Length: 256
Figure 1: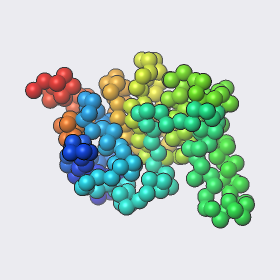
Figure 2 (figure 1 turned 90 degrees about the vertical axis):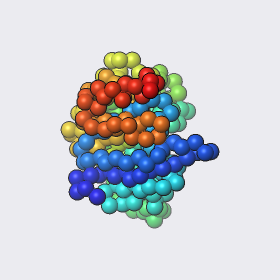
Figure 3 (figure 1 turned 120 degrees about the vertical axis):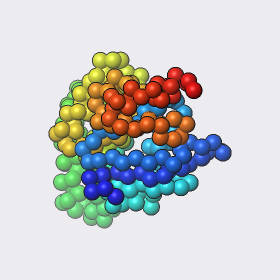
Figure 4 (figure 1 turned 135 degrees about the horizontal axis):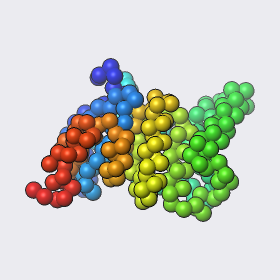
């Protein structure tokens, strides 16, 4: 594995009901990089994220986060490694408040081992206090400070997207996986997401793997682009050059 790589995907293959979703997909993500995965609907983009985060298992292939084989781990262990993600379809507790949703993002970080919780060790209390401070700081950073006690289900869609992103950040990830963070957002909201991602990467040395259909956002923030089409890597490289590739245009337009 490359010494600069934080994530390496090798020859991932998976089929569902006889339909091939991914066919020999490989990619490498370097530390501090922002990589965008793009492609037409049904290209296999979310399937790729689901395999990386252990929502599903591949038929063949390997996924390593630094030196750790992710395919050998249960999904809940990924947050311990510093991996967090958002979902295309929001996965929020809509009857709970914004604050409670953000606290869920740091649950494992705050409470540590079962023994520490049962024995009420001081370390568990300190971690909980740290989490509360982080929740407040991240809520303010994402414009949610005055909405902390509001029920998530009462918020407009764009604000719920912010809540999910904030919850992922509460986990203090080193690798952040985003599934269409600008989906359903107005242009001004999408631009805000882009500015935030660039700032977070600079401040926290955050590495980002992002699926996105908003090409304005991709051009503004991505260092590199990997294009998927029908489960295969069609093109990859620097964002502006790759998006200008005639094969990419053909894939999006459905041309042969």
